[in-house]
Amino acid sequence: MNLEIPNNIFQQMLKQAEAEAPIEACGILAGSNSKVKKLYKMTNTERSSDHFMMEPAEQFKVVKDIRSAGMKMLAIYHSHPATPARPSQEDIRLSFTPDVTYVIVSLQDSSCPAIKGFLIKNGNVTEVPVKIIEQ
Image 1 (cartoon, helix red, strand yellow):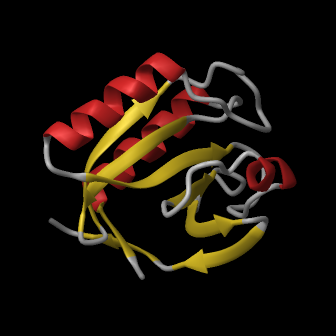
Image 2 (cartoon, helix red, strand yellow):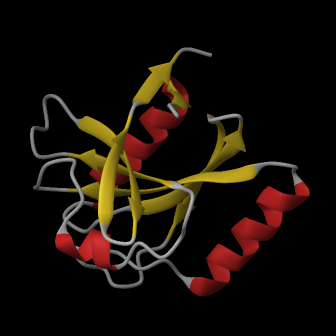
């Protein structure tokens, strides 16, 4: 299963990650058939550089909006301001949402940001191809 993210949405994720650094930025990607159609920026209530926690009221509102638009939550994304685009032990431990791709945007090399996706289930991590597409 590939995850397709339009370039304009990837650029929004990147701008959010850069603006919120050195804390981790986070959000939700929604769409259908593995193609992202909408980005929802979320608040990292932990304001931490090595993990994130989404604001519950924001999450509830976003899930309601996704359902009313006939879309599905495809991914939860967050940034790694200074580390590679791979799940940390904290990311794995806090991956509570099944059947979504966990997308990580790494700013470790600011001249070449990286994006990768992962399925995380019962502590097992499997990389999922992420494709940035033109609209």
